[in-house]
Image 1 (spheres, rainbow, N blue to C red):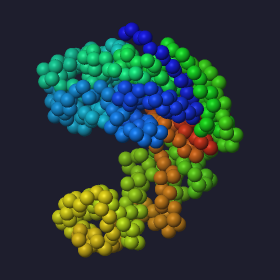
Image 2 (image 1 turned 90 degrees about the vertical axis):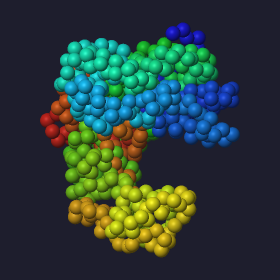
Image 3 (image 1 turned 45 degrees about the horizontal axis):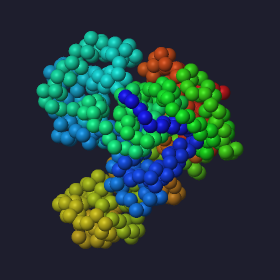
Image 4 (image 1 turned 30 degrees about the vertical axis):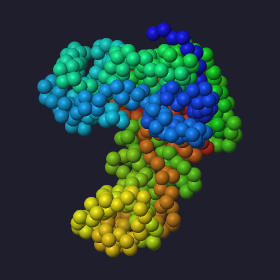
Length: 507
């Protein structure tokens, strides 16, 4: 594609203010053109929403709807395809039956997030098919890159041919088709300025979209950090950013990381073979890096905490340790004893009992998700509350008098909680620490990319599959643990491994 615009690439390490830099440029561009002639794309919907919110702060004359091209690349392309033409759960199940590769019912298209791949054979082969197209490569290369691939390259090619034919006959599309169709239609959008944030996470196919939408733009602004490219499994390709042509500006001051944490993170990054080389300094001297053997002696009563695992399977290690400490926490694990929704309910329930008022929209969630009909709420009253305006306020007495609330019992009688869990929550409530529940969070490294906390604990343990992948591609694991280290605003704690497979963090 012929490009006549000017591209500026901001090489931005963790915490160097790339989003602020882009927003300052966006403000300048809004003085030259209107929001509908600006495209601002980022890797997540949350990032696009944040960009709109920041733009509105400085440009009060506009409304959120004016920023229609502030989105992910997929969302931008999705608008060209009617929703009814997207593959459904039933379509996927039928494809699974016809091909002999069972596809789980939840592997369905979502207008927000795309396909959700589960562990069935069909889900896996759909994932491989998507990788082939996003990486613009061959079935052979994709299968050879996978650890423990369940199908051969020939089987993948046969499935992909059937899958493509099925979609053509049904006039249906999948998640990756959005991108390919957008390009095939050849309708170049009229953008004056194009912003690409989190560029390190783009696949080769997505870079084609970037080039396509930029053809009529006066300027293109790209920001990314190849050291934080950790979505290779989804087609992310750091080399595309590294080799991108354009004017390069290095953001060389980290406003997030204190110098000790930055020095440590750079030790991890030094091991990455393929990367852009430049120096970064910190404007913060405080902070520390410590190697620990357990969580026992860590005081988690102050500040925010991330306890990060490479794989979800290892979250139990942190969960069990915190339960022994009787430390309140929330966890992304599906088997967590504590979760934020649960704690939010407890806080809301206690505030209701003390006379607080809540909006109908909040109470509808309370009734729907937590209060059992018949036992706590009179049958039919959930529907009655649904009919009320969302912003109308209600207190406990009104709920009892008009909306079927039967009881004001303690929350621990409503929840069917294990005794130990209840004990920890009651202790937190008594000590007044329940409201700070979200201050200690257990999650995966991937899930916290783009986020930060005062204190970060990193567990270097990895699963067997990840270990085998690391032996094939060390750069990817170096990048993952670089991301983990750079979430810390103050203190970084490197936990000793608890298994015989782990990433070797520097000393």
